[in-house]
Image (cartoon, rainbow, N blue to C red; front, side, top):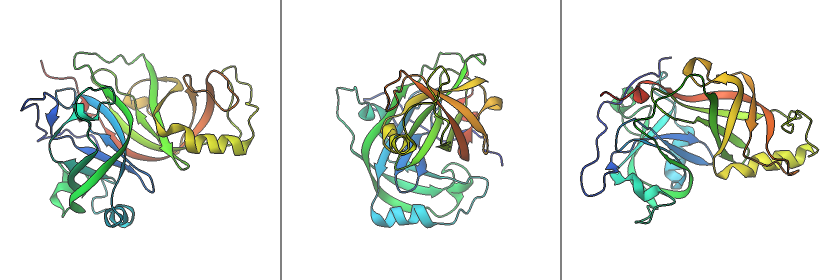
Length: 270
């Protein structure tokens, strides 16, 4: 299954706001719906952004129940009307965007998915929370010797990992994972004192905002990425577990690779 393609028709940067453009999104999740912006190392698309969103019952039912028409693109995408990405910046001082109107596609809107009838048109998506927002430095160079790291997010018992993008060339990957019971330890490797019910509740509720997680003994390149059905040691160095330790580690089992892309994040042409 080849998911390594490049955007063809993204445009933007016109008008008064330099972040104004056509900002395509990957749709992630089920009962709780997220959108992950499909970034590039060129303005105005140089943003890694994850949103928790809401849709009406009719659109939600379609997203959860439709059959995928494009086997090599086993995901949904959303292309909203042009808007300034700056309006999603939680630290911004300008207008705050609370909704987007656009079209849902089965598969990628710029590839084979865009050749099929859309799942929903003129759909209104409400922005419920900003899970992650980071502008990407278009001049930054990626080092393959850095630690493989992801952003962990999710609610209601379903966790996702989005590859943390820093520097070009890079890759955009989103996974669904589950924490393996009885594997949570402190940073020294000793088992956490929290009982399983407490940890289950913690994993179901703690990651409404994305938290960084490093994958032990792996360098940051696409060949070393986490793929199902692997189990890997995830180190949450910036997240305190219920028992209050400074950081913790847990085995994460990858259950689905939702999306994988390298072409859009190639080094920008000089």
